[in-house]
Length: 465
Image (tube, rainbow, N blue to C red):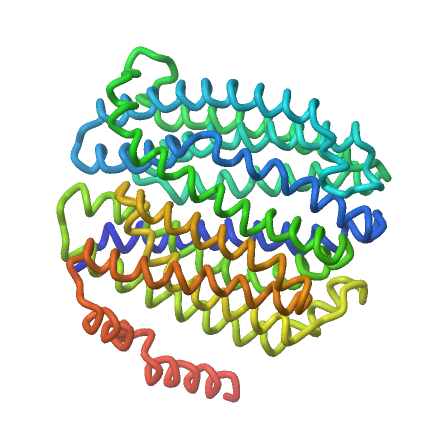
């Protein structure tokens, strides 16, 4: 069902997303041991708690960047370049306006409340805590414009290039943040350097977009209020995902900090970071297939949508199984060496976290079909409900069962999401559950076990010869 152009874009997308996830994994793997090398464990634990707060500002674009990217891609697929430009400019100025309003309101609130005392941090002063939240909050807000700029590459079929550029910038910004840490500077200076690097990265990305896509004009000539109103339902629905992510990631860490203390925050965050290596690999599939879902939906090619949905879920599960098995075998040993023995490895904790990743791999990949076609309104509500309920359970689980209870509680939201996502995605793809499940046994000839085994034997014989 896929033509050569679609397959080529998917392959390039997978490669670029692999680079992107490798960059994210490098950051996660380097960050913890590097910070622990120069900062006390308790200080790093407080840094993790404080830096989780700016993540809540991630919903400030109200989803217009995501909705605009989907709309621009579908317009380009139909040959409606004017529609793409209209969506781009309309959402650009709306995001700028919302950034200013929410940024000013959040900054004012931060200076009125004792943030450090509320977060139960002691090694980072109150004034430094406030400035860290301001600096990193500004970086999060600015990231919403970066997302819209990347959508420009996505809509013209150059998603892999845009993703590669973003990966390079992300690594450069992270490297810049490590400089003050290595020089012995504190959390406030580290946050300021990271924010400055983000500003520079956004400016560079804007220049590249204008150079590579000349017709993608910056300005307000093509912006229309009617366009904003038309995209509003899908855009506002996107607000649920970053809020849910913030509750799932930052909120969980804060709950653990309140329930059992900052030291356990580092232990849990480290184990979850290792488990999320598998999650990162699965998410690269989602990013590669999303533009193709938008394009095929605009062309009303239901057969291609169904084929893309089946294949993306199949690949995601294969990757999840392989990485999870590897993590189960070598994860605890890796965890011990990675943290220089600072964080005690727990195979039981890691196993439960990996179980959650397995469930996540199915529903998150399946839900891409909803994101890409702006049919995610109810999905956002379900996601918020699942993460909200789980966050409440997590507090008591941490009190009663420690970190094992925290990990087990996170599996709850993943199972709730699966029961909603899979039937909904199958309806969009005009597919049935039996046919969908049967497709998992239908591998491309070059990936079938017998073919892979023959290739392995030929390689082994060649090496022996």
